[in-house]
Image (tube, rainbow, N blue to C red; front, side):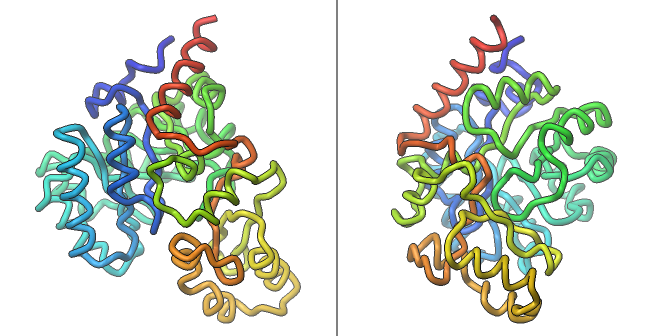
Length: 312
């Protein structure tokens, strides 16, 4: 078994079947370019950012990767999803990943433009729906991941999705080293997507306070907020996130108050390192992320380890 020649590497023309997650406010051209230049697939986060800003991000990435593939993540619930769906066509983006919805209405136009479409899915049912819609692959993301999460764990979700679809499956959630990659391949995945490990990349432009929280995190420093609003989200444990979680659990924070308190909280974390009002999104695997280093070093080290484990 090899991790460096799969249907994902062949589909996208990349050296390593590794995606850098499209983390809102975090995944911009510097990080995406570094991952793509290291042989993976760097991804720019669409989020709800202005279209002119995203056009500039795409063009800067394109200039930096010199023909290597990169992607854009489109959150389908974003108010500007229609505009961003058109933008990736206009700018010749090679790969689109999607989240929070069904990209069916954009699929024909994207495929006609030659874009590879790879949705993130939290369930077997959605994976099958995406395959029927024409997706080239799917990212099966477990609840261990940072940011908005489903309930199924990566260990449970990935093999069930692999069994349910014919297209390649990328595993995501709780992966931070070669062991996680090897385990994902044993479950039937043909690639992996990482977010939390790349928060500690030298090229990741988050506030130093955010980066330090990730590197110093222990195994128990992960907390989920938003369960009572219907939008659970995994964060680093801080006074702010603990206050949110306890407040929604005991009813001292109503759903409306929760939305008001958390409005703009991710930006406050990423840009300002604001521990009092910021949501520092992070996966449960943060306790394994111990140092800041270049993205290239991370990727090469992980795949060297994974290859050794799979070929013992």
